Each structure stands twice: as C-alpha cells, then as structure tokens.
Length: 175
Image (tube, rainbow, N blue to C red):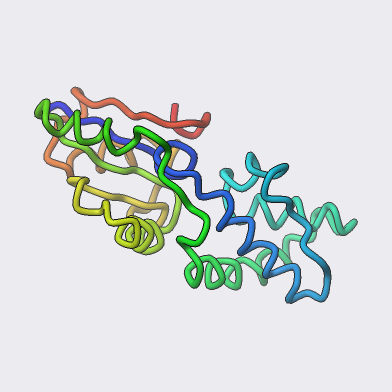
C-alpha cells in the first residue's frame, strides 16, 4: 500500500508559538524575563525543547549548562502540555492535502520527534487525529528520526509498505 508520512512540527502545523511560550515559562520560573521571541526564534522552536532551552541559556551567558537544561526540560514539557494548542495552527492546505491523499487511496501517517502523547494530544485538540492511519513519536520506539527505522515502523503501523512510502518534512531530520 502506498503511504505518505508527514512530520508534524513545521510541516503540518506551526507549533512554534506554543513551544516558545513553554520555554519562556521555564525561564520565568528561573527568575528571568522571556528569552525567546515568537517571531525571531521560530526556527529554533521547531528543533525542539532542548534547542530552545540551550538558546535561552546562551542568552543568559550560561551556554553549555546541560545540567540546567536537563532540570528544565520536564518543566518545559509540562508547560507545553498545559497550553499545547493556544497558538498552534495547521498550515493552510495541510489537511486538504491529507484528505486528497486519503481519497486517492494512500495511507497517511505522522512520524514526529515530539513525544507521542503530546503529538496525540495536539492532534486530538485540533480535531484531526482520526485523519491519520498511524502516529509515532520520539518515544514510541527505541530509535527516532533521522534513524530510518522510525519511518519504516510508522509506515508498517499505517498498513503500508516501506518500499512504497514517502516522508514529507521540513528539516534535515526528515531526509
């Protein structure tokens, strides 16, 4: 079965606003002002929570403080979960493309490096989870993108053939 697999963040949805808000909540918890800008730091937001925390720590003059990043990361995830859909928007035409593929007989899935529970929650809140035949996240398997097994297993879970699959994404991780 032919399968098209999408990345989530930066491909189907602009999640940067909610991700940046979660990182800024961590910085406020550390007693400092917001360190990330929703318009200027979109790119780093789409590279994930740890990347945002690293950038903020660099701006504080504490670059390389991985211990603090490790302490803040669970707080970032909790803040993100609590406000996961305040600013997130599906890109125009994204779901029309998904529907068109489904109507043409393709299996459609999501392979993301976002934790699976958070991806599932976001898609539920946006009312589109049921449009995908499978969803795998960063913690679904022992590996994650760019390891090709993450994509192959997503395709299998969607009922497709990995040889007849395509990944649509926005970063080198999706190559």
